[in-house]
Image (cartoon, rainbow, N blue to C red; front, side):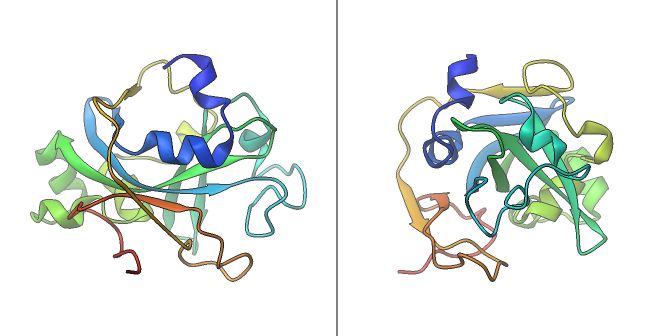
Length: 184
């Protein structure tokens, strides 16, 4: 992806990522669900400014920001936007590459359940803190553009209490691989 892809406004980036294909060491799939966060957003890790934990959010666009949630699940974000402190959380993928590896890592067979949530996605793709701050333009990452403009659905973000009503969650219309249905 060109550098300008990552520096578009973070809400636009979150929409533009839907339909792109992400893989790590050849294991991955089509991004079907994202959420946007930026430094002026009280739900964002960057809201209080730079810290050791969120330093990747303040670095160059087109890199990863990876953190642990609930002390047990990794979450993968793509740093981007016009201003530092913004990132897009990858909430779900439609698995297309390396299904056997994902199934072994997750201990399940059902393709719909392999990457249908940020923690599941990271477990299936073997994401850990070792990949925090890495560029998406070099191995082990590969991010490919989508073929056509997909139909999108929009709704409030999940699992937050601040700015919870903001419609900054985006999904691929009709996808069976979302973490949760969008409101009608």
